Length: 167
Image (cartoon, rainbow, N blue to C red; front, side):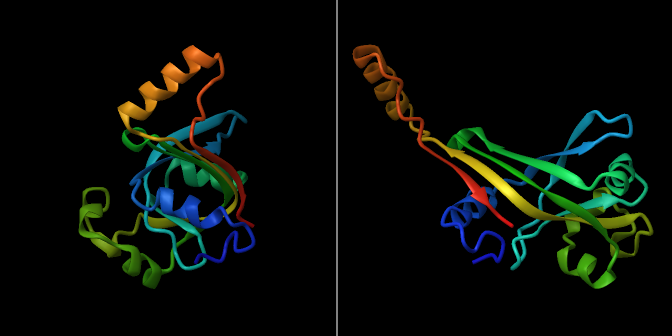
């Protein structure tokens, strides 16, 4: 079990929902105060529950994080009707051993010199809060919910939803 959210019974489910989602939209605060989002390839959460992403050290997101390290990560898997939002604080990590530990060969497309690329860095996000929506993905379940709503006038139960304290 990840250390973040160890007192929240929904933390394990949140981490299970995002473990196979490879892309997260990372939102930072731009230099003009507006929100700026971009897709990031997500690494597996570590034993502490921190979330990791590779980045170029000289990029707009590292500049934004140096000014305001609050981020939001949005994960979506429409095929399974799974959606997760995580907020937390980010930090830039340049530790070579950690870079080597998290490295995988497909990253060479962005970092041609591999782990020795002078532009390589990691972003570690320390989650504080999360929320998930986990709905049934079956077409039959959706049709049943639609029919039930039409007959009873009550909206269908959309599935599991929970706010999670991860700090």
